[in-house]
Amino acid sequence: QHWKEELLTADDSDAVTTLREVADRHGGEVWFQHTGGAGSAYFRLLLPRSVSAGRPAAIAELAPPAMLESRPEYYDFDLFRRPVSRPDLEDRNLRELTYTVFDTETTGLTPGLDEIVAIGALRIVNGRLLRQEVFEQLVSPGRPIPSAASAIHGITDEMVRDQPPIEVVLPRFQHFVEDTVLVGHNVAFDLRMLQEKEANTGVCLVAPVLDTLLLSAVLHPEASSHSLEALALRFGVVAIGRHTALGDAMMTGEVFLRMLPLLEAKGISTLREAHEAARQTYFARIDY
Image 1 (spheres, rainbow, N blue to C red):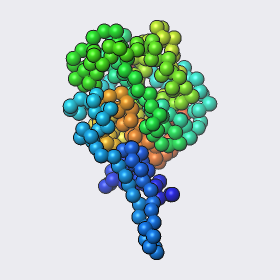
Image 2 (image 1 turned 45 degrees about the vertical axis):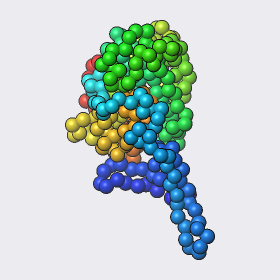
Image 3 (image 1 turned 90 degrees about the horizontal axis):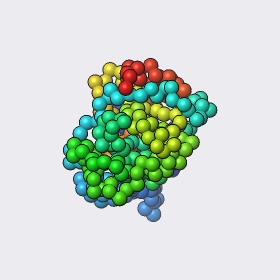
Image 4 (image 1 turned 60 degrees about the vertical axis):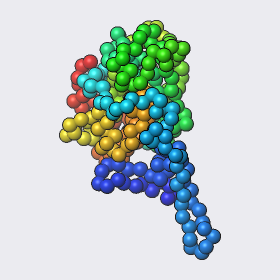
């Protein structure tokens, strides 16, 4: 069944995919079938009927009506001085590692003042994004959600009224990410939001971290934008459920997988090498 894994490219872009990835991304199936005649066969690609302009129903309910820009790129937190629980992973090949790709949605952009209203995450195992193994949880922020924030991520006061607080959600999330490498886009912001809750929850995430924003600066230092939207366009990733925590995590995961062969082409194949390359980028030197 090697034909499922053969690389397909889109025009002359960096986008690389396979038939298996296409089927997995859209919740479909692909198989090879003989017709019964001598030397005659074909493959079938079965995809579900699209809903709400092609978005999965569960995500479409939360998705905003317009494609809005990512958080400003100037948010930063020193990713390279964080305590790390698994230094033994540093010299492992990037393709061998298990990742948790995650994102948060918040009431605003000020850690210490604003609150988390959603966490979404899913795993990458053996180079595949596992859409069936996800963490998706709305969070009660204990305060009203500003209308400006709701306009972006679609989460309202009514939706979080009966949801658990961060003190309940964060320990569950810690268990989900155990023994994995964290991946996020502009992830320093998300980590700072989580760090603000360490005292109340007793949860300190000490997993290794990779930031697709920083990796984008490594791969395309001349690019005018390293936003998630720009990366999705550059790598041919379809935007699904944009500005929902799980939707953004899915996009980030797809982008990250497409970055791996480009990183390898630059001689970056281990976690240590990826960390060092990211450390040298401009964005890593900006103070939050």
